[in-house]
Length: 480
Image (cartoon, rainbow, N blue to C red; front, side, top):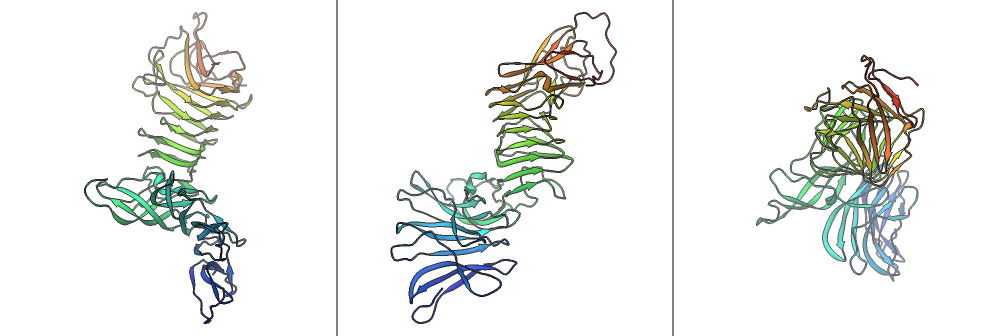
């Protein structure tokens, strides 16, 4: 990048990838005059330095930019001074893609009252995710340095906002800087550790390492499962743990995860097997929504924040309860709801009583005639084991609300549903039907007009509704 009047210069190669490409920075001289540092790239095929772009120049044409790391695809990260109209705006984290030399400014955690902040990216993995630090400003006030992760779309996430596990003996963390990142989401850095959580003992600087769910976290690995949401199989003692990105369950078997705090992730996809989420009083937020694919099952009763697509099977809890969905939900063709009841005159969404699927947004019935959504009716004893429910009289009429949606119900048609009574253990000779009333879907049982000839129990009944209730006989299958 040129030499000074004495024929000397300064350059540093910071990182090299598997293909032999390297990045770093070099002083830039023009006519022997120093114009600051420039980020540079050296291709494996030669020794020439390719200057990478920056975020503006000062009034003298100078600036400073450095590349600190690159991945195996050739994407590099670092920082650059930012100038707007020659006015200094601080250092900003930057990414350079291998396809060119342009500098992409990465996000930050706020600006001071003059529009200035400092940030730098120190590591990038092959998924294009980077880590580093950014000053944090709230309303123009400085709140210290924070360790940051940048997703491939350049958005900045404060690692401190992802949920930090307290150490076993107590204490709190402030993650100040992240300096290393692996392909499977292990992050290392430094931070401030307060061993007694604001007590008389002084906080001190300490190194940390943790695993963040980047890109896709999946249960497709061998070995025992620790049963905790999004954790790796190895955790260093006393360090934070967090989850961001996507969570994908693809194992065709039973899998249980437990929440030990409110959890945040991007999208959740359950594409195979049976997943049970034990909420333990916490919530799961899926920013990109939660999808249960055909053939997969989700069991749980805790609050899900995000839109829920039911293409497979969904089962609220281990007993009658409410399944709260803070968002919208869609019941698609081929999907199913396992609806349990243990007391005919109980309380909706409670034990004793029956299941309630409770949506704060809009519930859309996307099933179609000929490929319906299935409601599996299952009776339980008061001890919540399979068997006859309490208080049911086949000669009485019942109306049980099974789903509510504060934002309304779209696309309801009784013909879009099948009712499966295979799990309904109480004897009945009447008929079942679904109906919509305002923001509720109700399962209606109508007693028979006469009881002179009661049918004998036979096979399970699967009933379709085409606007009018069809008479059911327990355990007799109706084929359409």
